[in-house]
Length: 209
Image 1 (cartoon, rainbow, N blue to C red):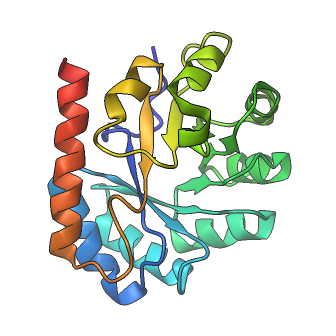
Image 2: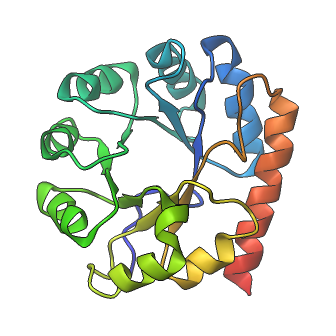
């Protein structure tokens, strides 16, 4: 049985790269209404800690808010102080993983090889983010799924859209990080809501098939 690192939400992580604090509440509500309850604000967005704090406060128990592109231990501490609950990185950094767990947050490090994957597991990762997922592809993930702990959630991130969800699920992926196909700077909350609803429908259809 897969660990429930998504706290009951669908295993779809909205990557909100470029979001601004003034957009945070409207985008949060649009995503929740569409059925997406796990949100990541990359730290290379404008004033990311402000957006995280706004969304974490607004969401309460309705969603999990965290940070992406976390590269240093001090960033983990800042995200925790802002109310973030998930730390997502593009890479495996054992110090960041250990700091994340020490802060009581969930750790989703990025990996690409079996060596990186097993190192991240040893450091305490709660889930593994295969990035860039479209380069590794379902075949590469399927090969590693065979040797990884069966209860460890795997996420595909990078180049994933509604048309490819089924292929990755068949390869053993539990969830997805969805970026530009869901949110780009300048989109309205209505735009995000429509894209999110389409992604949720595609995911549910693939799971039910």
